Image (tube, rainbow, N blue to C red; front, side, top):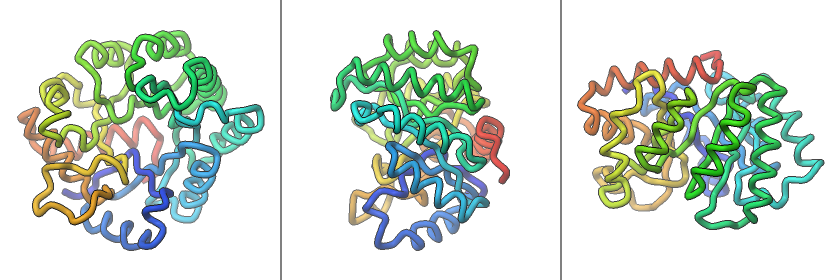
Length: 264
């Protein structure tokens, strides 16, 4: 499928160090026209921004601190992220949000970090790249508090319930679907509710190197996910919604261009 956009790939991850250019070439061959590189801490955000500056036709980036590392988000980190978020190639603030599934940072630290990212987004006028796991109520409360001041965003790698989905749609947020939907075990609930996402609010992503689609045939020898597998996510969304894959590809690409102001 031509002209897909992967709105979230962690290509600064160490697993791509040895064959980065091959991964990019394979993504292009698979029909991807653009990839948004995810920043999850100071180093990855800076690295993603660097790649986006070198190849702005194919890469954009986000800049932020994942809730797992919220405990390290200090004054200097805020200045660094705010500075990156003012760059043209940085199209979203994040990855940021709340993750109460693992609590690698305390809930207090996560809430403070998330709110500061919301403030940065309001200041720079860019959308947000959001993470939420097992923290819907607190996440929703903070998002509601700041929603009128931010330029929208995407709840990335959505894996939650129909109630959570409706709450985010009520706030006019976009919803990112990953290879989670390709998992016949964990993804069953998502398979049943993905059709409730309005076409103009749907986005596709791999979250590479994570969440390798289990529907891939033949099955890859390793577990590393890559942008070239985004068509598998598209195919499963089409199957679950009964919609045409080409139509979904066109719509999700248009959605990404509009939300993130992409120049592609």
